[in-house]
Length: 87
Image (tube, rainbow, N blue to C red; front, side, top):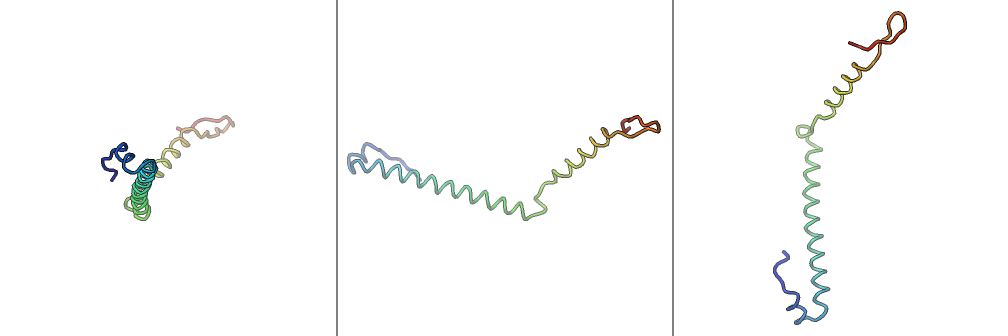
């Protein structure tokens, strides 16, 4: 897309405007390529968000972790009122 070019040769032929147009062209191409990249990523994110089969279940792992830690830490009261930890 950017190709092979010689700035010195372009400056000799077109004058001082060659550098401006070269920079303008390069920035335009970078923006276009980045736009393609972002649109491809967006399409994949939409496909994953709408497909239940492709979604991960990390929340279930976190729920299990929280439940396990809660069961280990939560204190129970004995008959005499002193706290003891769950077994």
